[in-house]
Every structure is written in C-alpha cells, then in structure tokens.
Length: 286
Length: 310
Image 1 (tube, each protein chain N blue to C red):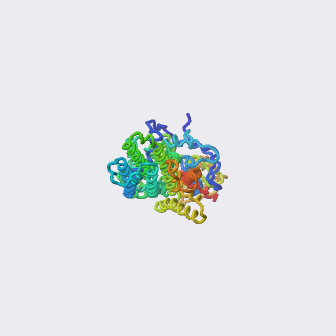
Image 2 (image 1 turned 90 degrees about the horizontal axis):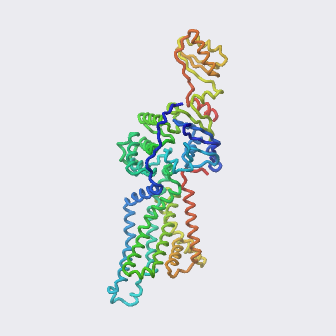
C-alpha cells in the first residue's frame, strides 16, 4: 500500500452559478452556428418579409401617401389580427427551414461521437442538456419570428399611438404566445430528428418530412374520406387554428380549438419522451 | 480521520435482462486502482456507475462522501475520460478544454489558465491551437486525458487512459498518476495492458461476468489464491543441491532447473513454509543470490482467476 502525504486540497475558489454554467452550451453553439454562411443567408432572407411588413405599417400610418388609391384598398390595408397572422404564417415556414438546417448539428454529432458522457460527467443533468439545446434553437428561431414580430408591434404602436396599443394589446400577447409555441414545437421536432438520425443531412430531411408529409397526409385523408378532422394531424394547420383563436381571426373550417390544443400538447409530450429516451449518457442494451 | 473512499455496497445494475454488474461491494482507498477484466466484464459499467452516468438498480455508491445522484457536487471533484474519442473535430484542443472548464464553473480567465496547464502536463502546448481533426490518435488520446484532469479533480476515472500514447508520454502520464495518487487522490483506471497495470497500481480489482473476482493489493490477492502453487525464481550457485534439499519439503510441488544450473523455478503450495525452508537452507551455508516471485503480478492473477474460469 502506498503511503500518501494527503497533501491534496479540494478547490475552494469561486464557482459560477448553475445558470451561468448552463448558458455555456447555448453560447458556444450560437457562436458556431453564426459562423455558417448558409445559416446567415437563410436568416437574412427570412427577414425580408418582416421588412416588407414594416413598410406596410409605415404606409398605413401615413394616410397622405395613400391618397389617390381606391377607397376599398385604403380600407383593406389595416394593421390587425389578419396582418399579424399573415406575418406569422410566412415566418413559421422560415422557422421550419432554419430548424431543419441548424437542428441536426446540435445533437447528432454528440451521439455519433459518443460525446454525451463527456457532457454528463460535468455538473450538468440530462434535462440541462436538452434545455440548453432547445434554447439554442429557440434563441435562433426567435430572431426571425418573435423579435421581428415584437418590433413590428412596437413600430405600429409607436406610429399609431398609445390608443392603438390599449385597443390591440391582445394581438401582441397572442403573437408572442403563438410564435413561442410554434418555435418550441419546431425546435423539439428538430432535436428529436437529430437524436434519432445521426447523419445530419438525413436528420434535416426528417425534420422537413415531419411537417410536409403530415400536411400532405392530412389533406389526403380529408379528401378521401370527405372529412375535416384529419387537419388535427397537421401541426402547421393546428398551430394556425390556435393562432386564429389567439388573435381573434376567423378560423378555417376543421377541428375546434380544444382538439387542436390537445393535439399540440400530445405532440410536445411525445417529442419530449423521444428526447428523454434517446439522450442517455450511455448506450443501454435492451 | 479515515481517508475518503469510493464505496460500493451490494451494487447491481441490469440493462433489461442483461447483467451489467452484480452485487458489487468495494472499498477503494485513495491511490491508483486498476480495473482488470475481459471485454464485457463490467469495467465500463462500474466507471459509469461511479460517475453517475447510470444509476444502480440495487445497492448504494458513495464517492469520497458524495452520491453519484448529485452531479452538481460530484462532478466538481471528478474527472472522467471515457473510452471514446469524443472531442469535437472542429474545436481546437485549447477551446475544447476551456469550454469544459467553463462548464465546471470556472471563470474564463481561470479556465484558460487551467486549460493551458493541463495541455502543458500532457505535452500538447504546441498543438493547443490546432483543430482536433488535425490531431494524431495519440494527441487525441492526450486531449481526452487533459479534459479530465484540467479542473484538478480529486477523483479521476479513466477508461483505457494509456491506449495510443507513445512510450515517452506514457511514462510521463504514469508519473503524473503517481504524483496525484501520492497526494491522496483517487485514480481509478481500466487497462488491458496487464504489465502496465502491474507497474502502476497500488491495488487491482479483477472483474469477470459482472462480478468482482478479487480486490486488493496484488500481493495480497495472490496470497489468497491457494489452488495455484506460488512460483519463485531462485538464483544460486549450486542449484542442483538446493533443488534436492527443497524436494524434501512437502509443500514443494515442482522444480524446474535452469539449463545453466545457476537457478531454478520453484512451485510451492505454502509460501510461509517455503520461506522458512529457504532460510534453513541458507543457514546451512548454501549461497542464494536472489528469490523473486514469478507470479505475483496481474498477468498471473488474471490467468488464475479469470482466464481459468473461462
């Protein structure tokens, strides 16, 4: 038996807090993502529509510029629930593409390299890891959805005045909640795809397929059986239905708000289960 | 006050119906401890249990007084190098280790200082700012070790840490392990290179089929194996005569004389009686130059306890 001098002393210096340590993962991932040209390009393209929306807001608030245009058109261009729904629909599609491009690179390489034990042998839990990866996508997608949306809402408030805000604050709240929910779902789909398929390109395709195949399948079922309930399996339609309710816009024909809320809840729960099942620190033989 | 230990109490882990480890009870004091066993014997499962990456189905584990279910505290004092080459290819060695240290909660300045120190210890400073993708296998192995030691943990768990290292770095790394162990830290490693385990370890844990076969200092473990006669190499002048004297002893089972008649290999069932007999022979005026145990090593233990059982 060796004789030990017992000269070792445990580190007693200052340690940063849990959330500071937690934020290391998203910060590191964002830095990497913003170095990718394709990501930057897609983000720039995704901001064209918000800029056009901003021009629209400017025009509606400058009646003198609309003089000479038909009265019907002048009445048509108004910043209301429909305006924000259209803005959200366009940005929602960009969010899917951006998530499909960036999501697979967040988990698939860690699984392929057996790097999860490396993370979990730090003071990080499995929930921390999943939350950190979600935050990466949430933060990224918020830059093309929530933030431009809030800026547009702020721009309209600034131009129209305080009365507009007090009359329409529910639009802002509905938009924040609606977009947050969509960004959460898209992020989770991207992470689940990344956790299941270790090849990044295929994982990206899986993310796109999730949205577009379900959309196509719901249309097919509705057409074949002459029903409308199959819309509920289409996440894009379901979120659209929820947005309409949140922003007080005429909803499309199909399943009600309760059915859509339940479907969305179940989808999130299933995606969470997939992530918890796949993201284990060590490979488990079954 | 007793030294902080790694304690396993009746720990079992099953992966579904597959046995990981079964009813493992261990008390590992500070120092260098080697886990030895064939592939699939449960070495990595034990290491994963120690670091809390998996939890036991039965039993309890204490790592220097901390529970593996408390990663916040346990991982602050633990360094783990898995068997996988998991460093991201796009990161530089320096940024990989610095980021790891930030996750341990060190400030950026401190993380950079510690990362540099770890790279220095493993002779990687020249390649610190090169991408891991450009590293050789040995360098990737070193960066794997560097990330485990960078925060100066008191409990190091290393899965095959010496694989792929060149002889010089291997010797330096072993010296590093020794210096840590001498300070009262735990260095728990697994290795397939039995000769190396022999040289490094204060104690060994032999594991086969998920069960602990033996645990303790190599010599003590060897003394407990009664079914295999102990082997000694004796160097002496009149080997034939000494061999004849030894053959009169009941406990001697076999003697092989060297061709040069200057030594022999003796097998005995009783080490103490053998030692007394040698003393007597020397007392009678026969010159014995050296007596060296021939199977007091991990290689022999492995063969007796694990190899034989297969």
